[in-house]
Image 1: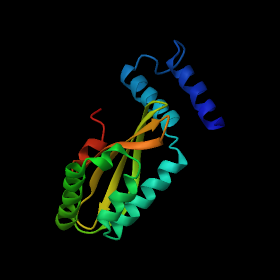
Image 2: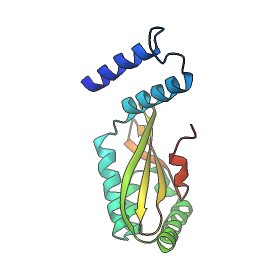
Image 3: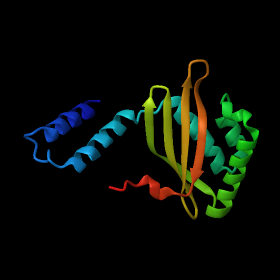
Image 4: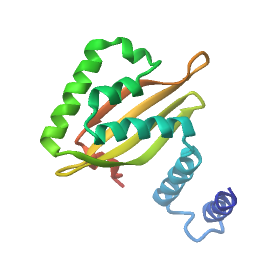
Length: 161
């Protein structure tokens, strides 16, 4: 927390008229974007645990069990056709890109206190995969998953700037 306060003080100086780089709008946007992501990067522990269970099961090639655990209490669990398609695509991705050997959180985006998207990179033996899981904090059910996407477009993790 103290590091964030120091960072904000430095950033405010840089953005002031006296700051050495105040005129560089691109740098200002970049730094503001990173400050926002630092503030929003606190992922609730229960979601970290849920993700860990999901990806650990995928690494052990327990795809059906992974989705069953991840979607417990989620309205997506009732969309049997959509879940079946996700499972089929997951099996196909492992055939194409090799066994999943690990995963890493790339970023999280909190758009409100009730809506959070976490982006992951899944590490496969031949090629990485990009995963995006969107969580909604229901007043009745707590954090639930409302969307899951994955693809091989890992270049979208990099900024265009």
